[in-house]
Length: 171
Image 1 (cartoon, one colour):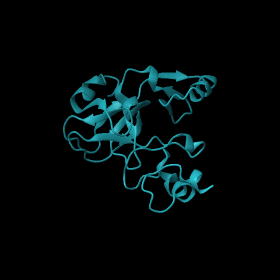
Image 2 (cartoon, one colour):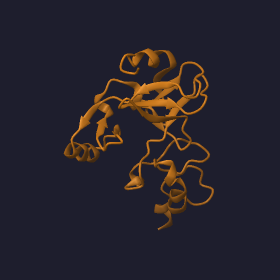
Image 3 (tube, helix red, strand yellow):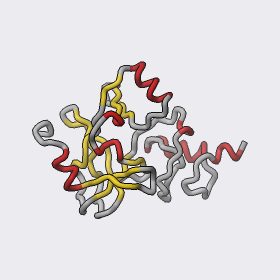
């Protein structure tokens, strides 16, 4: 089904990219969106293992690891998928259908709301990626949901509400 529908068909109607308070450019709802809607696909160049290390060292923030271990460089793609910002309280998620990484709404999203996802980062080297989502439950760093509690214990003082880097102040 997805290979026969051009991805721009849903992108132009449901979402668009514009300036974001979270980080740079974000993706916003053009209209009310129900849970379970396809919002965009994550497109880009599949990288070899040595290319991934070079891109990480260069600070590329558009890398997405697929379930089979391959990595897509979204900065080389033409889709809106690369512009979805991270949030500790995301409104969408990544799902793989027919081998295509798609961004799907997880809940109802209001018109004009920025749509966010959980990138699923593990905690390795996490302090390099502070979170700026501004949510009340922000853990301070971009890290997958299963690690939120651990990150709160390790890196945040009680009552800091989304302020990253508190571990540095405690030293």
